Length: 227
Image 1 (cartoon, rainbow, N blue to C red):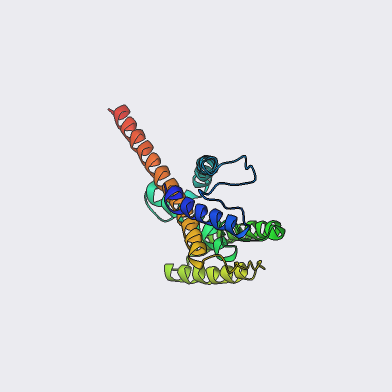
Image 2: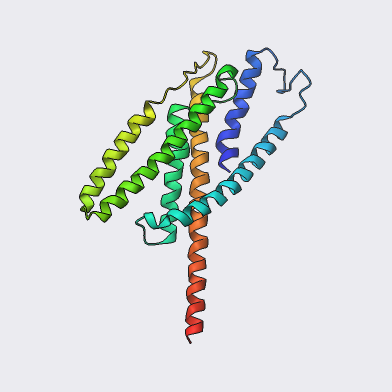
């Protein structure tokens, strides 16, 4: 839904503007070089891609949740699932988007695609490793009997150090052409981030609700057997 409401309209605007910049735009928005992929096909393909990626991420989310759920302080599966989703969104989307922001069509040089992709993946890798370190520090602090206030300070210090490490990663400067309206770039970046946030939020809610229902069924089954 977010894809069609916030992202696709901006992509459409960007494509039309790109065509105008290259002198290929005609009345009605058609391509004049015999394009084999229509805008509708692009939209359908993009929607299918989002669904497939969502399913794959959902499977990965379930596996990771099963391994790390005990590290979250929330008492319910719904709370822990939402916490994991928020953490995943921060590491996989929010932080990388600051260093390598998403750009609409027509912006960005093809010569820097490989480097930008490598930097994006490197930031995610650093973020994942950093989360693992924070979890390990928290566990060590608990084992040593450090007070909650001390654990919070230790976590805050680790977060500050991690932020410095992430922002020290070299990034590629992409100049936005003067013909591209600033609001178009801003709308696309915000829309992309909101779309990703919606994906992870939905994943956390659905996973938490399904686990909660499963726990309830197990509880009812055990009570029935006890009788």
